[in-house]
Length: 96
Image 1: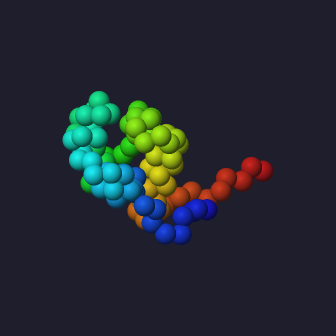
Image 2: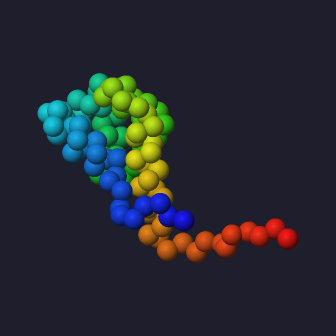
Image 3: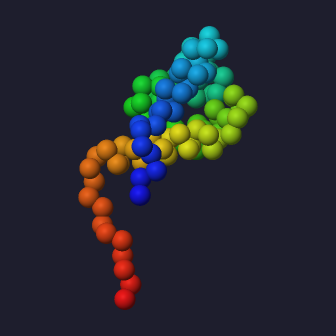
């Protein structure tokens, strides 16, 4: 049932390690460019907040990529957290 065998890379880590640092940006400079509060970027990079559709669209526009990339990364992370939580899932429903 679970698609992911290993922990997915969180979108905040991708943002920080693949974009902010290599481009020589600061969280403040990125936030100002995107027209959002620096706290939003900081919380995403520190895995305290999820990427919302609005932020995904702004990141996509900023870096010339798709919003789906950011939302898929967030979705994978969220599903992994649920899997690791040990949540008890119902059995598949059988209709007689």
